[in-house]
Image 1 (cartoon, rainbow, N blue to C red):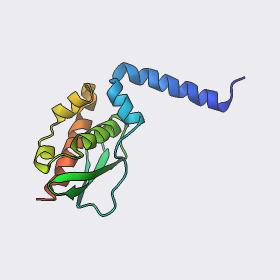
Image 2 (image 1 turned 45 degrees about the horizontal axis):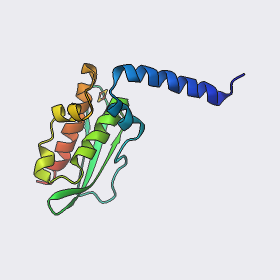
Image 3 (image 1 turned 90 degrees about the horizontal axis):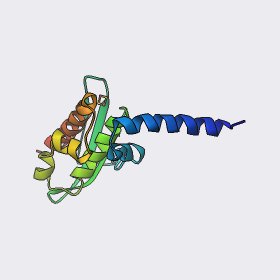
Image 4 (image 1 turned 90 degrees about the vertical axis):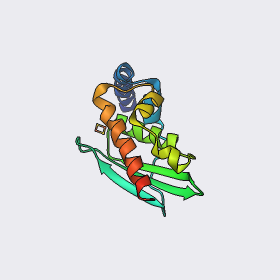
Length: 138
Ligand code: FES
């Protein structure tokens, strides 16, 4: 008879099998291993934004010179929201502020290897939150 752990492994395997049908390997990687997760202490700027679905993302930055030296995010959102937050913060980290402000949802979706249409608003929310944080520095 299988242990409780085997049952959880089975459920995790089933969830992953379904996720693989819907999402690119890059989305799944960012969801399973999110980059830059967590709020920053003493950020130079931060913003929280919520989408119409109710999910919220917060993005925090520290600036060094004219570049983003540190960046972190928090979210209460679903897997694609975590993946979008992880990816957009990875794209912005180390960039000059002017370049980070130009990151678009289309570029984020391309970076992630695509997103199902029902999750493109997760990319919009991640990009808008980054822009909102950077606008606080102006
Ligand atoms: Fe709404 Fe991801 S489901 S932001």
